[in-house]
Structure formats: C-alpha cells, structure tokens
Image 1 (cartoon, rainbow, N blue to C red):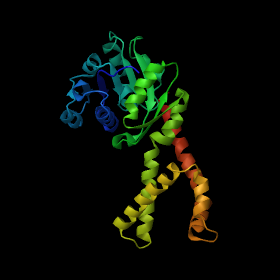
Image 2 (image 1 turned 30 degrees about the vertical axis):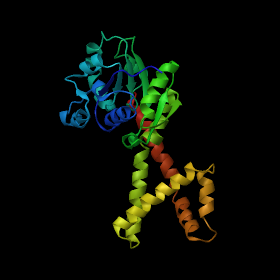
Image 3 (image 1 turned 135 degrees about the vertical axis):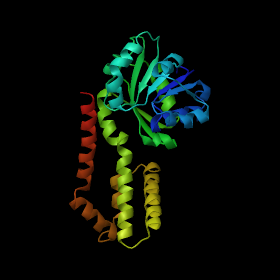
Image 4 (image 1 turned 135 degrees about the horizontal axis):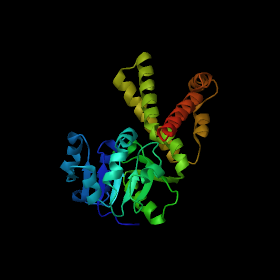
Length: 270
C-alpha cells in the first residue's frame, strides 16, 4: 500500500469531513497534512478546528496533496470541468479519488494530466459515523492504488470492489440507501403514533428494532427470508402484517426506487 503522506479535499461536506476525520482517527495522515477547499468558508471551519488547513483555491489543494478526494456534487464538477482542465494541466503525478455519482473516470481523467491516477468510489452517509459502505471501481488499477483507497475508506466503514459499470447500481442501493432506511423508520414511527403510542416511545422502539434486526443478520448465517419465517407464527400478528406488505408490493416498490436512483446516476454521466 502506498503511504498517504498528504490528503486533499475538494469539498468539505458530509463525505469530505467524514473521510478526513476517519483518516486522522486511524492515523493514516496527520491533520496538518490535510488541505481542503470549499466555496463555502463556513463548511471548512470544523475541519480547520481539527487542525486541517484551508486552501484559497482548488489548485492549491492539488499542489499540496498527493492523494486528492473529489467530494463535490456532480453538477458542480460539470460547471467547473473546463476551468479545472486548464488550471490543472501542469500537475505532477497525483492519486485522484472521486466520490461523485455518475461522472465516469474517463471524463475525470480528461481534467487531469495523464500522469494522475483516477479512482472512482461510491460511499454513503454512514461514513460520518464510521459505518460507511464504499464500493471501489477496480478497472485497470494497480493493487497498490486499490489498497491505498481501501485503507482510507476502511477507516470509516467497509469496502468492496466492483467494476465501474456496476457503480450506478451501487449508487441506487447503498449510495441512496440511507434514505430508504430513514423513510422506513419515519413511517414505522408515525404508524406507532397512529396506533396510540407517544412519538418518543415509538421512535425509540423502532430504532432499537432496526438495530436488533441487523444484529441478528450479522451474527448468523441465515438469510432475511429465513428470519421472516422464524418470526411469522401461523395465524399470528406478524404473518398478518406480512400479508399487507405482500399485497401492497412492498418489495416491488423498493426495487422501483433503487432502479430510479440507478437510472439517475446513469443520466448524470451522459
């Protein structure tokens, strides 16, 4: 694994901040060796308080960093693409990691000199609490480069390797995935309120139920379907609830949502 001597962040929102904090916590890089730029100065202050250095421009970040993370929205990249291509033309070898949905590595390489390595990843919001799920596109990359990226993202969760053409599906499942869970928890809580519980009580019960259910999956070899069968007693309450989910096509609705997110990721690349 190549050593991370200096880390640069273009964008210091949820993803950028989580990566920086995870890297510092795992002692992959010292905070004074992290340089960041965000068009909103206030967004950089929490990381500055950690000891990271704010830059005056994106070019300064790239000049001072060996590993750079593009933690910006794809729409911002599209707006700045031609400007950056001109500004970055004389850079020496760098490792550029993109967390942008939909923007293909070939297009990103067009902004940087040929000496730079470009690696696409798709993390999710869990990074901010050390529980991220990150997929790394392996296409044509050396093992040492992949291990460097894995070390950076494993400091804040788990990683898996995929091909770049699978990243749109990853975006649909885990990139957008926290939203599905949040909506599920909110819907369950609201249902509890409608059935007579105080909101605080319902919310606490739903969160612990989700936590406990995940623990069951993580600590056994049984599948979600196996566990569903275990908790559904014939003629019981859970079986009745399952019947409603099946009648309302719960799984099909989720599949439709994942496809919509996947297709949006594909559209961002066009």
